[in-house]
Length: 233
Image (cartoon, rainbow, N blue to C red; front, side):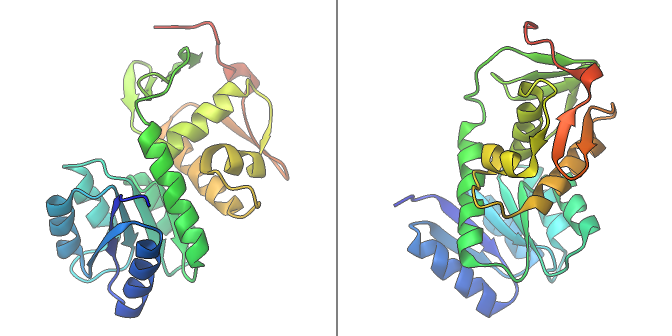
């Protein structure tokens, strides 16, 4: 039994109860909020280990909830959206969501995503290895810190692991399926669009043109930006 506390923020009672029931059966402690203001208040009170956050909420939406809760606590967030809209997904990732699911989704997939995000959050701060440098960008696995030209780049734990995986590949192409297995822990090939959305989000946060798309295959670092594996700080 896991024992982690999860806050479910969903204004549709049937959906909220279905999610809460499934998560409780997995051993999580679950609390439910039904609107934006209530979500921020409950997050402040509970200090949950993870938030499952619907995008469309009364009061104010999930984007604003994510901004507000991250202003006082960096809690992992899995965002839910009823619309298959890439813009919504990118905005959600841009304000700090770690992953997202488009409704309708299977309870099994939601649980898998939550477990993967919690694993990454638990690993944050416990990384090892030399600093990887490519151009003005440096990745320090020991502190999970990324800088560009000396300034901090704020990536979610998922985005950090994605960029680190590409950097450690040394310019080799990684398929979407490989990245899903390495970063998300999926091995059934589902969720390729998740990789694409996170790549877009990372590109939006790092100004240099580091990641190239290999059409029909996956992603790699540009050869001119292959990290110097001997660099340390």
